[in-house]
Image 1 (tube, rainbow, N blue to C red):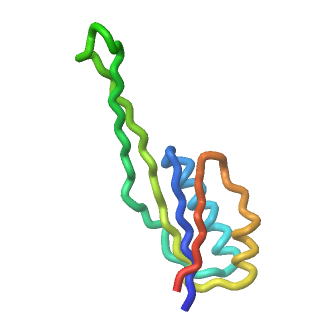
Image 2: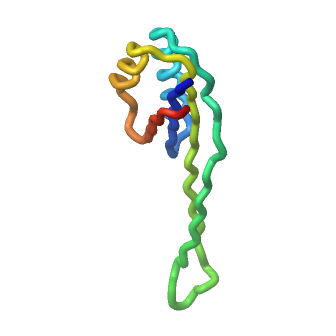
Amino acid sequence: MDRVRIYLSAYDYRILDKTAQQIIKELKRSEGKMAGPIPLPTRVSRYTVLRSPFIDKKSREQFEIRIHKRLIDIVEYSPKTVEVLNKLVLPAGVEVKIKLTK
């Protein structure tokens, strides 16, 4: 049986969780059966930058970027469910990937 997989990713976990709840609320209205949101591991990228390249080589600054991810599986869906997914208006900063898997 086919299922639709929705991958959500964002830098801010609060916006990501609100978006996931909005998608779930819309899917419940369209009578689709789903699993999730499943939190996936957060990817952390750390960067070290020299503050001054000439005199103080030991003086450095460290930065990090966290990318939070969620997964929603739609197990049973109808054409109405697909229509609802296409009409969703999502906030800026949230990346959405929708895949059809078997």
